[in-house]
Length: 306
Image 1 (cartoon, one colour):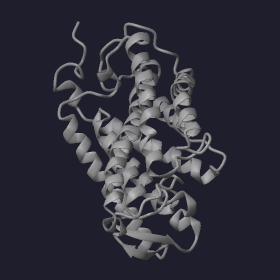
Image 2 (tube, one colour):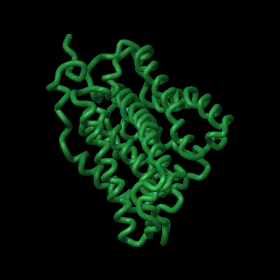
Image 3 (cartoon, rainbow, N blue to C red):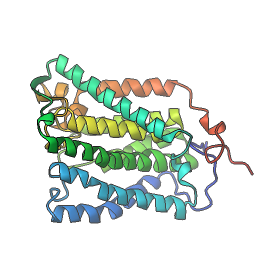
């Protein structure tokens, strides 16, 4: 049974079949991001088709991700012929929801790292070394902007546009599974292991559950930004297997013990604590009723009036 999310606004253009939508998503991702990725690699800011080199490489992520956001926005407006609000950018108090999500993301990452450290997975090597280097604090601030673009675009593309497109042609269960599968595929790399891919899929399910609960993507965008930024700058450990190359903002931690506990080269996201936390949080949000905001605040998130 076809369902709606975010908005009951009808699409005046072409909505792809649900099974085709993830492939269109990956196609848009490749054609929009590849030129920027190749350019950054040519200039030496990233490894060839690989991770960024240093904090400036991370900051320049916003180039490729901005291109992806524009490509998907163009598809929504000119192919599907519907508003960006119908792809999740809707509801009152968007900035407040974003900042609340940001705070929750920082808190959850802090809780994960603390749990790992208490369990013996990290040892403390230094306290707030970033404050000894003003330049490092400047880069950490710039990375907040870089992650704001990167994480927000990912949420807009996968939990906003793709999620809502699949729901318009199928249902919420399909939207959860197919959008999360596409997100996981987009994060494939030669170094990715099966546990890494499982973690990425659970991460996506958690984000979908947040979207289902809140009926917009503002909050989960902020959460993703806070999670990535604090994980990448707070503790001098990798985030999603990538190292920012900056001294720790809070405390420098060194992994000790088994990889299942501290995530090893994957960072805190590879820990069993992260898997447990996101799984439980997803189940809690799935059991809660959906927000009724769509029916209460008026256009463009209200039911379409003929």
